Amino acid sequence: MKGFTLLEILVSMAIIVVLSALIFSVMSSFGESNKLTEANSGIIGLLRDARSRTLASEFGSNFGVHFENTKAVLFRGDVYDSASPANESYLLPPSIEISAIDLTAGAVDTVFTRLYGTTTASGTVTLRSRSVPAKIHTVSIYSTGGIK
Image 1 (tube, rainbow, N blue to C red):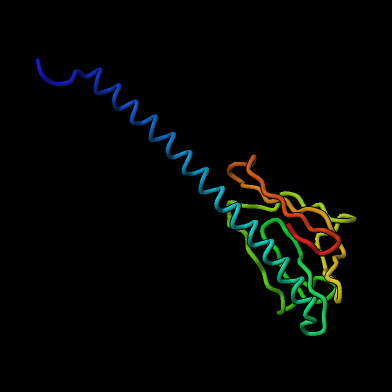
Image 2: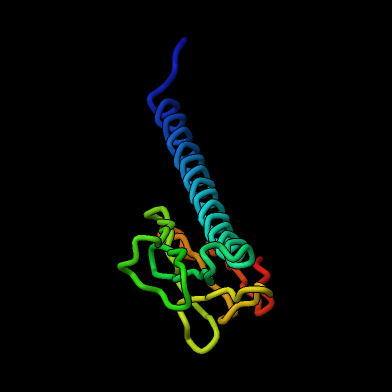
């Protein structure tokens, strides 16, 4: 007899389904890692931009970054004003959130000081994947103005 039995076909299909599910989950996790890495780089870039503008005395002002759950906002001045047209928002991808803001004295803003580039609030900001909560990235802000 030539051909395949029903059992052989079902086993082959089951193997294909299991392998497809594994590949899909790995690729999905890889995509989340990429989004998290991009968001981390975006936050670091925004902080470095604020520090650079402060050190350059752009508009003769300090610059800072305000953190919220779904975005970070670069602002001009010593205090964040949500209505200011000068604000520049960096929106996180929908699957990424800021899960923890652990800055000096419970602050949600950090402002860089002119001349030295030091910051008013140091600490960490933690980014997390909403779909894979175990995936996190932490941005460190040092009192010296360093960002990592």
